[in-house]
Image (cartoon, rainbow over all chains, first blue to last red):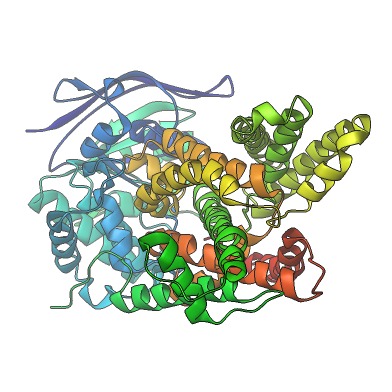
Length: 257
Length: 344
């Protein structure tokens, strides 16, 4: 059972401390969600795990230190979907999803029939067959997010990092994308680490929440234990009520007068 | 179920390209002060290559084999290199305006070559491309670091502004050197404007090995150039060693540009015109764009050279002037259409 272990992760950018002392454990099939106020370091933490920005501390997967690996080998373990994935104008959906095979190719190699087959498989799994020849720049928000997730899946890494996968989407697409991620982590045995903005939504699917404030973990655990009015008042400076619903805690901001 | 394959050049495009290449090469050798029928051209080339009987007179033979063919082939090779370098820079910098001339690469190569010429031209014939290469690489590194640090936002014009500044600086230094060596100023001046006229088999032999290697290297990076399209951060997480790949592509494109510049002088805008016309026709994938740029860059420069030779015949215009006259308006067109932020 593949497991990501993070110990004492710290990120400094331009000699300013962004994130420090992060400990984290995620096994395949699990979904951990990082929440926190703006500027808490959610995206930075994810980028550090993805190897985009420098960090210190241990990042281990099944005992393998990610820092010892080449960029390519690291990508075979960890895939990353950006908050707003770059969708180059004029690129077909198929070509974009195919780029996910990069980690499995030598730099100057071209794709083998096996790579094409994997790409087709992922595209049909995610119900994207009708879009296969479409220019990705013409897709709607929800379709883009699904295509970006498809690209991450062709990378075939056991760990996927998703930076605010639903922030730009309306409630219908939001639900669709979250259901998809939930299904994939169960069926494909993938460990998911995501950031999220909407507190109520963050309590719906993930197994575990990590509340980040000023770069530190201030609360972690189940949605019920993290999404308390006290925690939210202290770290967001917001006055809210939390109602327990069958799907999870519902966070409602209160009017002052 | 609908399926798709990776992007590749269709057989139809290959056939069209082969016809275009043969047609322009023949046209290039046929047209001139003495125009020769295509049949004479081919019988002469075949007699030189395969020893078949030739029907042409000895003066026709000289015109074809000694004067025009090397010149046309040189134009082709240089055009291929400049267009594929432009295409490769556009991919790595994610900037549709990148071109060896506009990035200051050509000016850097020019400065390097000028310094080499002033320090004893006879012995440096083979070192000339190397001196030009050092200048070219220095210029592109300078342009890239200036363009990145000057304006934080990744605006595609920042890089070009930096390129213009670097090119002006290097050209000024070059002019300064020229004024201190007035005895060679004529030679340098003709060279700066871009020329193919004095070319013989010798020039072709000097630069073809460099250019061939560079083009082969660039072609092998065509898939990587498509990966660059998603930006550095995402490319990194997809397992592309971004810095290393970019360095390799820049070195190959700059070395090839330098080799071309060392022999023909500054010929601008080829690297913008050719890839952009191709983009409109075949789309943005470098798997197709790059090989076609190699082919049509050559075709384009042979045609431009025909114009340079014939517009004011018997006088010749510098080929650099022709490409600038065609390219500058084109540049403005691309600038206008890329303003909306559609960086490809």
